Amino acid sequence: MSSLRIFYTRHSDRIFWAGLCALTLVAAVLSLGIGSVELKPGEVFDALTGRDTDSTAARIVLYSRLPRTCAAMLAGAALAVSGAIIQTVLDNPLASPSVIGVNSGAGLAVALVCAAAPSAQQYTPFAAFGGALAGVFLVAGLSRHAGASRMTVILAGVAISALFGAGIDMAVTLVPDALGGVTDFRIGGFTGVTMARLAPAAGLIAVSLGATLSLSQQMEILALGSDTAQSLGLSVGPVRFILLVLAAALAGATVSFCGLMGFVGLIVPHTMRRLRGDGSLSLLLSSVLGGAFFVAVSDLLARVLFSPFELPVGILLAFAGAPFFLGLLFRQRGGSV
Amino acid sequence: MIRLNRLCAGYFGKPVIREITMEFLPGKVTVLLGPNGSGKSTVLKAALGLLPRMGGEILYDGVDIRQLKPRQIAQKAALLVQSRNIPSIQALRLVLHGRFPYLTYPRHYSGKDYAIAHDAMEATGSRQHENAKVGQLSGGQRQGVYLAMALAQDTQTVFMDEPTTYLDIRRQFQTMETARSLAGEGKAVVLILHDICLALREADRIAVFQEGRLLCLDQPEAVCKSGILEQVFQVGVYSAQTPHGTQYYCVPGQYPAQGSYECPNA
Image (cartoon, rainbow over all chains, first blue to last red; front, side, top):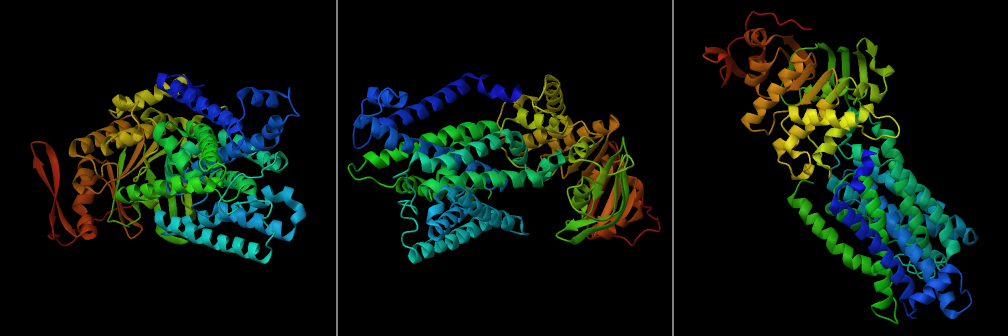
């Protein structure tokens, strides 16, 4: 049970996990209760438990707030874990699904499916998975190429990202209605998300999260560097491949329902690593909770800051994330990247 | 025991080492010497199966490496790498990962693994750092922790790629002492060093590499007398009897004509 010891040995650990769970829960409750129409906790509770299904309050909770809260938390958890995986596998602290073109690969796939076959919308998570895979393996292939420094990999990711972005723009220009069902696609947001739209993506995310958690020990060995990992008997090639597929599935599924949401996959794993630094299982679990919390709170702010106007949450994330990325860049420059 | 037989290996389809034939003898400290880029690290990585083999064979106790799983190789040979990552975990946890090759489902380290990890940290003088994060340690302390991980792997052969580089002199000597005591336990210890004098003084056998070939494999005195080091490094290498035993020293630019000594290979 030694790998579970991290959860209860030290007092500070218990406080950390209890605090993180509580914060996430509070964010969920607030996200359900606060918005353009203020709801009382009792009304939210009645709607969730099925005691009230007909009132306006119940309809708002069940058909607007609940899908939206679920979407925000799922997206946050999935993108944060995807970022944690990509940073470990590429051994590159600056990498994340949005930075290296994984999100935009998924976005391009979604745009193409919506443009070519508007009736096949339920398949978008899987198309997005394919697009994300293309992005992740392009960059992983480049990073294995001889002499590619960490900075080169990031710049290559930026270029690939721009390329996919141009593809999205072209699809949207030629078929203007393509992404009509997904508002704010290029910025990232949760307006108009429904449970039906969320369900297939949620399934893919749940399976991928489970698989990633089961590989946490292999991921921790991989973080020691590929030579050390291999000399410890880890089959580095296959493990890397599987982890990258999982990262693509997580990011792709997320993009399929909320568009190109940036920076979550960068900020959350970094913050959690800084706060805990306790191995991969701990990093992954805290990224799940931290990501859900961060995006839920950001989405809440996006709804209430300029009420009654609503910002796409991607704008808030960019305002928070871009300075964070710059800070990281300058710190790494002074350091060892 | 690991035996290389006419081994060729390299990166991206280009061979770096050619026709290397040597054995890593148990109970001996073998030091690989050679200029930068002469293929020393490549020999270590190839011997562990970390690089594609381009010819020849690698035998672990007579068994071809191709018939062994990564886990089985990891139970026979450990590697202290040259450039070490700084994972965000505690030192003890890093050392415990030396037990990874022995883990079976459900992959939890046992009390025995903890005991072995503690002993390994004791042996490298890093026990007091076990609760520190690896990133908070100094370079020397981190090296001690990584060395402890290799020891926890409990293998018959231990490879160390430049274990003394960037260390202060006391830690260099401590590292050599650890290497000697591992050999005393009957392990085959293989080190890459850049300090010729340290190598000649501490090694049981010296292997000299140049441009991907093994030129010479013999006892330190014989290698020193042979003049091969002068030829390869373009410096004078001399020995002197001192109150502290035979000591070696290098002199820039004064390399005498090659001696008549024939340097045997493995």
